[in-house]
Length: 404
Image 1: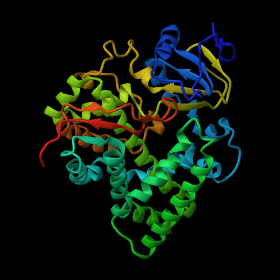
Image 2 (image 1 turned 135 degrees about the vertical axis):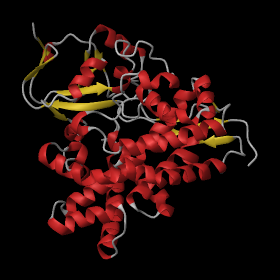
Image 3 (image 1 turned 90 degrees about the vertical axis):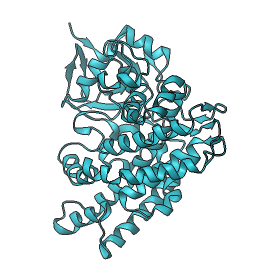
Image 4 (image 1 turned 120 degrees about the vertical axis):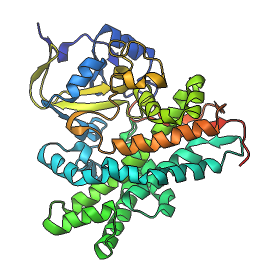
């Protein structure tokens, strides 16, 4: 018998509450009761099997286009921009833009940059290794992710601080306080848009071997990419590429410090860097949910969803579901045997920059673990809500200083 989503008796999870934690026992209890829960933003999908199936079901589309509206933002420059970013598009426009951007994110292109990732990480670690203390976000995660973003886009690396400032504020658009943060978001959008437009103008006059020049060429040669699509896309890449990596590095270190045996193992075995990325994204992802919207009235796993229904795949809940991962505790040596996590999404909206994020974090995490084998948190730090996109605003750490 088919149940109706509108009348489901499933548990309610208040994702809009800044105090709510998507990794909490409340979520685990809801997952044990049912694969589906009601939330402030539609429904939550809690179990791995259903989550995995949903993300590849073509009857659902990317549901992020309605995020501003769900938070009371009904007009203005942020809403206009949000409706045009890759994350909000579907169908032919999404496929066309994704095809144009894809060459910049190919494995060979990113691996060619890996030695530079190592140099940037080594430079930053050398700056604090002798102190015995580090504010992980300001001293490492933010400059590391911002400098790599500048490298990827072909922007001046020495301008990373300004790019990071805009990206930080624009990153609030993924948070549950988006309506309150709107003035900061729109100011950052204006600043970063102007910066990107200047970079585009420069590449029109002086082409280089970089992503901006490649996209400018696609715009100029046959109109496959309009000027507006070019600027909107680059602004989105500039903030999303930096903000998510910065946040995930902080969450990764938080996770591994809670498992000091795994932290020490990572420092001893840098070959486990890739495994560390997969494990921390499985249990403590910065993207706490992945959104889908029903395009038609449909039945999914015995539940009827009217067209327009919003479903949120809760990343941590799916990644630690004991039905898919019988031993869900963090174990770097078991990562290859796990069911693939869903932190980068799946299907046609699988994160375009996933290999960049995997590669730069696989470089950074072992280097941090090797430099600070006895690291411990030096106070609680400051953290975003564990709902929406999450991460550390500050994360002080102390450790035994090493001579450099």
